[in-house]
Length: 338
Image (cartoon, rainbow, N blue to C red; front, side):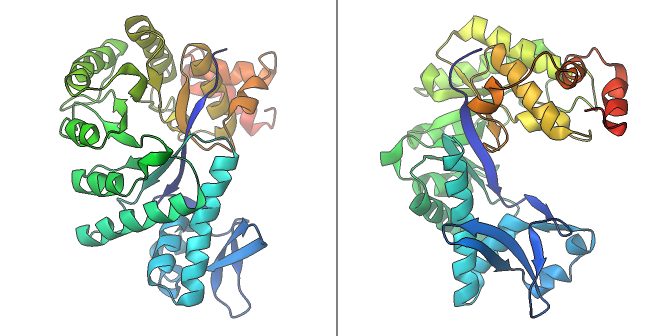
């Protein structure tokens, strides 16, 4: 097992979903709907705007809870604004308490209006930093939003993180360099997604040259080998693990990693089990971090993985391509054996 696992807390994203029929949504006495959260005072409610409750996503059983908090925090009445701000700040504090090292923020899907998004990224960055001492990770596919987010970061608490640069986003490298940021460096190619370990390593090699030319040292680089679901290709998990090993051999111990580990379980049952076992497998092969929910994946969880259990073996076989089509794992999940 490697040392401390570096957690980029993934939760403050405007794409994040709550189920409307789940424990985080509750009817209010006036007939409206609210998101349930807890802060230092106990249970709290964030009212959901009526037009969202009447919308298609809500009808389909989903609500973008972070987006609701942003909208209420910025546009609601006094009580709604206070609740929206408290909701986001509670998320930040919870992730810091759970062991996060960076707090990742993404508002790209909040609006189609660029000016509004620029206002939101500055507002939420300030809000989160009021509640947490951690450096921020700014996640955006838009260079202007990325720059605005980085500008709002308090560098006194440590270098911020850019999520992410790649050959496809080559123009983001100088943006990150000018901001004095660290970077998550993705394995995506200039015009295509990598398929093999060799593709990933070729893309990384070209990107590392660009990062070196822009003044980045290894300690400020967090590689993302690009995690894809094993439900699509049973070898996807093993490709990531093999890429991690190859990166360690090529660039040594100073380089870091920050893959989106939970992508591996998309479309499968028992996602938490799969994600935790995958994090463990990656960690034991040299991966020292990831973009994760710190309540689900952290040092304590990884240290407590029972490698002798049937559940671990089923998940490990699935992730390492030894369970064709994942049928043994899926059947065990259906039968309640894991």
